[in-house]
Amino acid sequence: MTEPPVVEVDADLNVAGALVVSCFPSIGFVSSIVAHYLVDKLDLELVGGVRHPKLPPVCLVQDGKPLPPMRFYSGEPICTMERCDKVVLIASEIQVIPELNLPLADTLLDWCTENGAGATILIDSYAQGIGQQHSIFDDDQSDETMLGIGSTEASHNTLKELGVPLLKQGVVGGITGVMMGEGRRREIDVMAILAESDGEIGGSLPDARAAARIIECLDDLLPAVHLDPEPLLAEAQRIEGEIREMMAVHLNPPGDTEGAPSSMYG
Image (cartoon, rainbow, N blue to C red):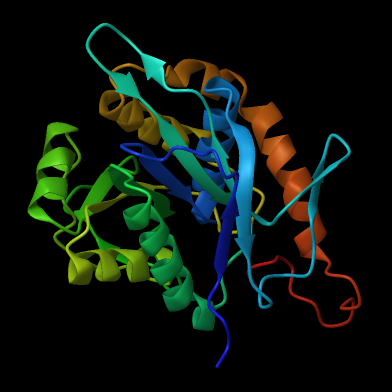
C-alpha cells in the first residue's frame, strides 16, 4: 500500500487558532491569484510543504530558490486591541491526480486537527458549461456569483455572516469536493468559497476580478487584517505573470514532448 502524503513544516510553526486557507488550481487561476496576494500582503514566508512519490518530480523556482510544488506559508499574527488573526496558507499550482485526492485530504485534515487550527477554508472557482470540474446550479444570471459550502452548521453560519449564499445544488469535484465530504464525515469545520469565473482552467484568461471578490470575503473573516482588493486589480498583470512563470514548468514536463496536453491539467 502506498504511503500517505506527508506534511513537513518548520518545527516551531504555531498553528493554534489559525485560519488555514487552501488554494489549489482553479478556473481562471482564481485560487492562485488569491494565494499570491496573501503571500505579498501578509508577508507570509515558506514554512514547509507536502511530500509524496506521486507528486510531480519537479521543483518550482522563484528568485533562484527552489520551492516544493505543494507549499505551506505562514507569518506573524496580526493583532488589534480586540483580537489577533493568524493565517496558514496551503498553495499549489499542480492539479492533484484523482487517486491522491482522498489520502491528501486525510493528511491535510489530520494536520489541521492535530495542530489545533481554527478553521479551514478552500478557495475555488467554477464556470458554467459542459466538461467543467464542478457542476454548479445558481439562481441568478450574474457572472459574478459567489457560493459557499460548509461541512457543519457553524461553518454555514460563518458563510451567512460573510454574505456568501450557500450552494443549493451541484456537484463539486477534485480536492475541494473530497475535503468538504471528509470534513462533514469527521464533523470538522471546513468551508469552501467558489467564485464564478469566465476564465478557463489552465488557460490564458486569469480572472483577477473573481479573486478580488474572494479577498473581500477573507477581509471580513479576518477583522484584524486589512485586505484591500483594489491593489489586487491594479497589480493583476504582475501577479498573473508570476503565476504563469511558476506554472510553465508543468506545461511541458521533461521527457514528455510528444502528445503532451496543452496545459498541465490535460
